[in-house]
Every structure is written in C-alpha cells, then in structure tokens.
Length: 99
Image (tube, rainbow, N blue to C red; front, side, top):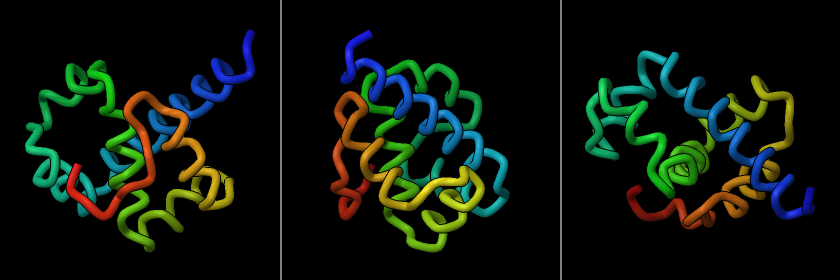
C-alpha cells in the first residue's frame, strides 16, 4: 500500500470518528447541521460525497474548544487533526470560511 493511500485511509478513519463525535454531542450536531445545511437524515448520504469528511474536520478545526475536546477523546495531538484534514479529498485547513 502506498504511503499516501495509507495516510488518506487513516485520515478518513479519523474523520469518521470526528463525525461520530459531532453527531453524539447535543450542542455540536445542531450547529454542524445549520452550518452545512444538511438535515440529520441526510448525513449518511452526504458522507459519501467527496469533501464531506474534510468538511467535518474543518468544522472541528474551526472551534478551538471542540478541537481540543475531540483531540482528547481521540487520544491524539490537535495538529494531527489538521494533518488529517489536508490528506482528505478536497481537504485543507481553511476553516475560516463556512463549510
């Protein structure tokens, strides 16, 4: 397996974990849905779209308390989340704009 492919797979796994983190939080989920314009029942379908997982990571990166809580839950350093965001399709760390 190529290094880039492994990096992307790890990033996707972390983004799926981040999505679960957001979905399980009664304060974060409504904010995520409002920002993305996605309805709760559409999340599974949206998750298959290119860029969705990168958007989840950008959402986490955009709010430092959320970033720090997720990093703690995931057992990783916060900068690993930014690295993962860049490894995803359509991903970058430009979390200053809406997703």
